[in-house]
Amino acid sequence: MFTNWGSVTPFVLSSGRQFRPAPPPPITSVAYARALNQVKSLGQDTSTTRTADQTTQAKFWGAAPIWNVWNEVTQKLAVSQHASLQRTVTVFENLDLALADATIGLYDAKYHYLVWRPVTAIQLGNTIGNPAITGNPTWNPLAVTAADPSYPGAHATISQTAATVLSAFFGDRQQLIVSSDGDPGVTRSFGSFQAAADEATLSRIFAGQHTMIDLVAGQQLGRQVAEFVLGHLGSAPAGAR
Image 1 (cartoon, helix red, strand yellow):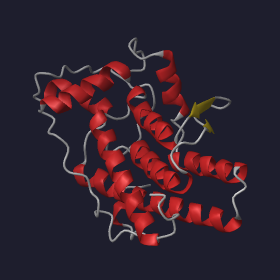
Image 2 (cartoon, rainbow, N blue to C red):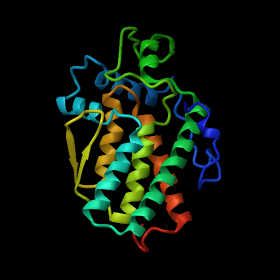
Image 3 (cartoon, rainbow, N blue to C red):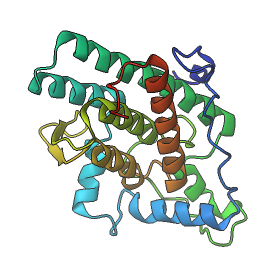
Image 4 (cartoon, rainbow, N blue to C red):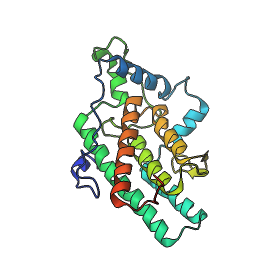
């Protein structure tokens, strides 16, 4: 459903490609092999190197769309802090316009670069021409892979966008208890928005969905979009950024 989303006119950005990440390293590079082999080890459905807590993280953050989780975090925080209607509306305005534009930028980059998902790259590893990658045709990820390109990662982009916006309004150091449809009945506790965003990001390696290359680019994109939206709307508290 998001194949052409990168060409949608953004709400605040000038275009979906405004903050398009730099090209990822080629699949024949050492950097790509290192990143892919990390997912090969930690993200396999039968992995013996992934810890029990990492498996929990992968399932917990696996619910889609990820922006629903961050809206729920914001709703709980506004209620617990007895935020005024005006402040609550302002927070959600910045958050969801930033998330919408980050999604547009995310899919612009995905379909511009068309990078293989780990499951494809690992199964076809012997055809890549990279001596540091050994293919495994029977390799499968812990989670079902989404039917879109890998670079940059959606969870990384969206979570970093949300963490940046919410930190501007509430300060980063917040005690959060997060729940998710990805693992009903389970909650995760964090001492900051950034800690929650970082876990959501890294969980995609444990789920076998993304390489660290995807995640670093996603966090950069999310931060850039959020800062641009905050600066453009001018509605975050003075000095909060």
